[in-house]
Amino acid sequence: MNTKVLDTILLILVIAGAVNWGLIGFFRFNLVSFVFGNMSWLSRVIYALIGLSGIYMLSAFGRIRSIGKDS
Image (cartoon, rainbow, N blue to C red; front, side, top):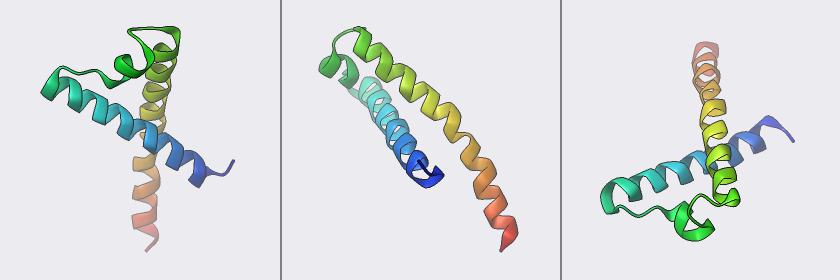
């Protein structure tokens, strides 16, 4: 799997997490719990993947910064 595909998949997970937090903040509605159950093993896996995706996407700052220096 190349880096571009991995970045796209992980960015989608980060966006899903952000949308979920927005729904929690504005409407007190947890989409992950609604779809996968309240802290079921599957919802915990989803939360863990979103968290790991966010940590990985921190590396995007470094890549974006290095692209700007090349041009």
